[in-house]
Length: 363
Image (cartoon, rainbow, N blue to C red; front, top):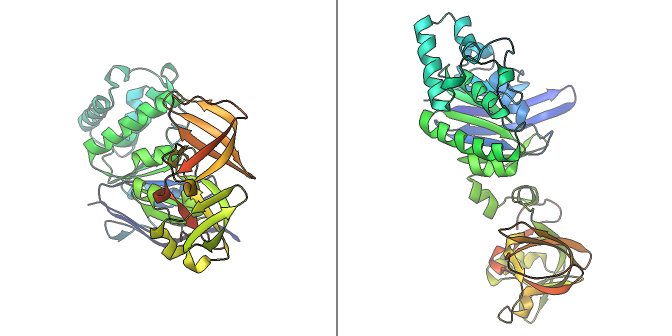
């Protein structure tokens, strides 16, 4: 069992806090992803688990044992870095075997481990090549192989795909997921790419300014964000936001501001009633907007002016102006519209989100 527990974990550099009060339990054999913008503390957290950064306060436990003061080599972890960190003068075989040789493993055992890892990664034919003779994807596989041969309890990944081109990143995401299913080890993965986080993680940890904002399964975070930051960070294109006034008319609640006037769904109105007369933040995802038809109720639509058209093949993104707000709508690829054209958009009322203007927590 390789459960990793972070208890009240803090890291500060003099008066600057990189990580604040992180409490997290990573289950045995779980693939968990730490995601957030640059400077949010995700890599520092990973480096503390690896033993590459000291802990200012709090505890790190693996298998119930406190490892704060253990050197990296005694933590039974393996780390894959962003820049591969391969020895240029060594062959692929020697790069993968180096750590085992330093630990005085038997030569036959080393050979078996390297061969097994090479077969898993599909690089058996590359074992005698030097890193300069490999593509970026092949180098990343060698870096993975060097970690696999150690048979660690926990794998740590620090943005391992960020140096690859877009197509190869997608391919390697699939390979990493297959690798996790095959090895069945606990894996902690750091990335700033929210798409990578959503596709790879059994659970996702969203961080901001050193603090954990929300932990959950990818679709849970996407559909039920805890606050405005999580809602805006997850999803591509990002969620649309508008600052609206909550008003009561005709026995119903309305969210209104400038060109927007949307009737609040009954199931949401109960939670929003205490904000009547106040301003709140309304959020709607681009995929929950569509060009209005005669069947769409008037109270769920608004006028917009098309400013940019992004034709992506599977869908069209319309960058529109709605009063003073800029929004994005993801519509069907067969829609025909022109720049500067005025149109009416309608929304899915069940997919509306409202956030407190001060705390930014979901209402």
